[in-house]
Image (cartoon, rainbow, N blue to C red; front, side):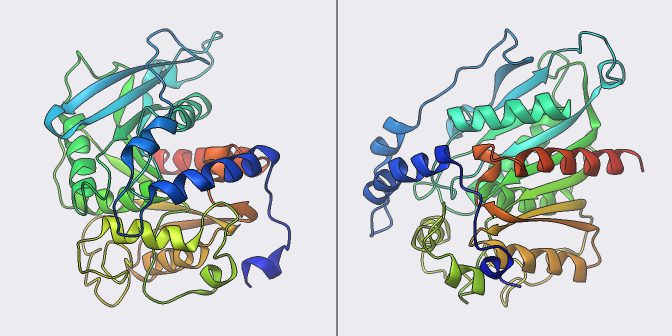
Length: 339
């Protein structure tokens, strides 16, 4: 069933409509047809949030540098203990979520206000310590730098000592999460992690929220939703051209994970995966193919489908999908931690 026949009315709140109207001209001006970007214009409108050692909305945050030469760092979000002491995680330690933000590999950073809000809410509502990763952006830095930096952060966390690692962080209960391009990145970090012997990190699950995948073929959701509501097809094409190696097309394995050029990528260990899709997201059909590919590969994978959800519903906090999404992620994590 196609996205539009499932429900003809996408859930688009007024604040999302306002965002769509205000940001569209900025991206049209900044993402140049020749594949370059007006980084100054993007940065001018990309308002930043500082770390908050004093808890904000019940969560404190601090920044840790991994490699200053690559501007590789992450922000740690640590929920304050519950006032009543009723959360067992306050005693036994909290699960860890390594989070990769979206933005087509080309826009947003870990300290962007919208990303900071996402990670803070995740930490607060899931009672987990969130490591939100800042990686370099395309087109200045193309594939595979983002994948390498994501994996380097995971290795860095594995080696962290007590000075920087929160004492209540339980690395034996670790998850990787990402939205949109961050979901793509999280997948490939999980693939690399399956081939590496960590000392303390025990990767239990992957949470891929509307992950950014694609291919040369135009699938039905792209044809139906090419102009939105929040993500346009011409922009996804631009993001792929800016990110993939020069001369590549969208059947590159980084985009078309189970496509003609993918090869055997899931021969090793791979964590249980939660794939979240939306009925009014043009990536929907590619995400369904990703889910099917994991299933055919014999991996544990769970699908959550919100028929009226737009691309970025998590970032925008769209209700009721956002609250349902949090409950689904909580249930997924509890299941994996209970094995």
